[in-house]
Amino acid sequence: MEFSRLDDDTIRCVLTEEDMKEHGIQLEDFFKNKEKTQSFFEEIVEEAKKQVSYEATSGVLAVQVMPLPENGLAIVFSENRENEFDGLIKNIKDMVGDLKQEITVEKDKKLTQVQLRIFAFTSLEHIEMFTQAIPMDKKIKSQLYKNEKDNLYYLVIEKGRISAKLFKGVCEKAIEFSEFISDDSKILTYYQEHFICMIEKNAIFNMSKIATY
Image (tube, one colour):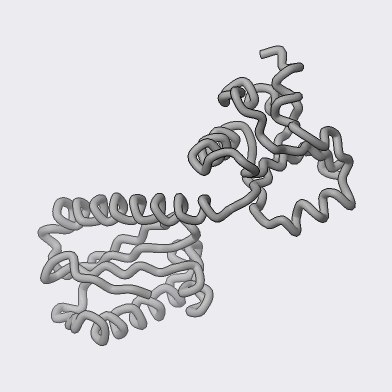
């Protein structure tokens, strides 16, 4: 839980998913559980006193709650009612812009360390469309599995010898046609043991050759 001052009257509190679990609060509680939310806000104000020396004078706060990527939450509260619809909103937009930039940088760093990513496609046609949307000048290490229980196709994309930039671009394009599942190699081991292996090597290249799109 991190606090910062946006101006003399406005405080920003950013909570991670772990913070919310620790306090037993969910986003839905802010809309359905008034008593629980009120108690949580009191904890927030008390913590703000410790971290940024915040002192509420009127007891009346304008509060903005905003969900963030990675299941986080941003809470902005202010006693300055005059700035509620201009300065406060502007500060929230600035905050979101900064957070998006930080998250993008963090994801880029993480992706450079990832060696594989797994995506679930609802049909072979979607896989074909994906293969037509990426450069095919280099063969990308990849495998294709099918789970007969959920009737989904799981495409495993490995970094192999391609550049981190190309790997990142291919994975970002895959998101447009599928759902990201995991980057854990243990999941691949499970697929190898329990799913049907449709294409063991160069699945992306082979699917691109039969694509009708």
